Image (spheres, helix red, strand yellow):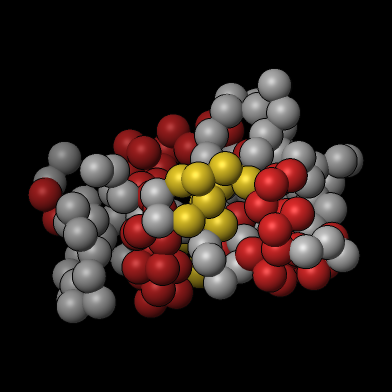
Length: 156
Ligand code: SF4
């Protein structure tokens, strides 16, 4: 594997788009709404401070109630809780907050961590049937998503 296949450890806004990546020709993705990424193995679902009011309003409860019921502290903000099986509390035969879902969900699968190498992308493809289907996302679009997700998906 050549070095240029990898995103750098920090994909700052200054990361040159001219630099070659394994997704130079773009990547196809269309969510199949299978729910695999919303269920299964436990994980974190980062919810930024600015996202909480929107989802709380959608649920018609106060910010305080929402935090106490659905969130736990994570990084500089919160993560959505899951049930004992690792299922997102808002997954019920589909996402029940789809219109207001947090950035982590909206940006999947183009997370910084998923784009670190072709091998990681290939592994993710085994779990997500939406990868390789549907619309072709350009390198510029993919980089834009990756930059937005760096704060919750980059490894420490
Ligand atoms: S695993 Fe992929 S196809 Fe299935 S719900 Fe998640 S993003 Fe959509």
